[in-house]
Image 1: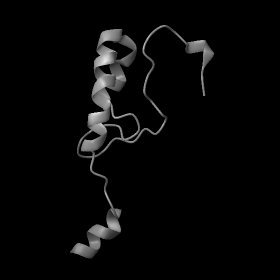
Image 2 (image 1 turned 135 degrees about the vertical axis):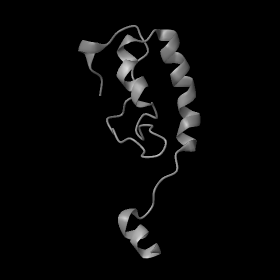
Image 3 (image 1 turned 30 degrees about the vertical axis):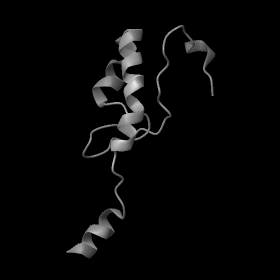
Length: 77
């Protein structure tokens, strides 16, 4: 979905509207940015944004998905 109103000549946000912060890494599991990067995105230069965009694929591989949630933790006790 493209929003023509906000289309500019700058690097667009990698947000995919799945905004869930991983509890340990503190990185959004949707776009892989930190909370600070998300907060400051609109104020960043294109160079800063490009640097973050280059780092995102590596961050994705570092996230360890939690499996089983609360019920899995209770079974281990």
